[in-house]
Length: 238
Image 1: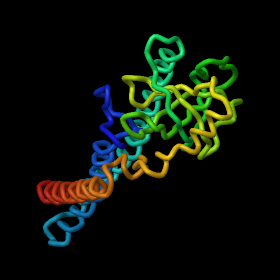
Image 2: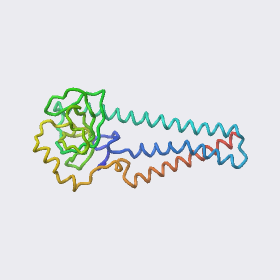
Image 3: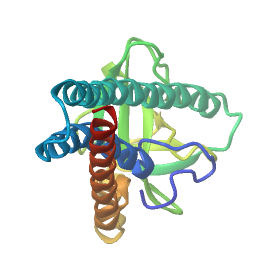
Image 4: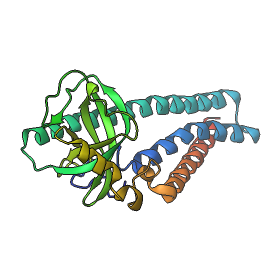
């Protein structure tokens, strides 16, 4: 987002950098239709018989189905790895084995977390957990972090102010700080950096406007590549 997705780690994070994933997904999303279109265009020349045409079009449909399954599997794996990382690195913050960084934060979104227990710094964490994504104002700039919070904490509402303890080396991990006072939350809400700093956005995760344009070009490349493949196969099999 505001910095490299691998700040402190070489692993890609869905909170910070999805440029490569989005480009690959757009490429393969349009490759399947490209195969079908290429085969149809080749058949327009009259040199392609019906059986190879149907076979190549079926291949295009298989690519489209494979893309649909692949994106679901890929996104679930990314999400599961993020949650596992939050649970592991968050436990290091709670145990005090790392020196965490306190930061004002605002809630962006949340989901239920059925597999991991909630975490709190300076307080008991009981009951079911939610994984919450927040924008945190760190000393090196705003970035998005995820935290496992008790569902009973009531901090999950979008825009809700909080104070988190961010992991020093895992750029997408934090723990909700339960030691804060109402004055601490008031200061977090009124922090001037909310209006002066450039906050991470959903668009920034794909590289901003220029990154989105590059992703679209990758999609067009998939369409062209699929078209050439479909046309070539249809002609070769006839």
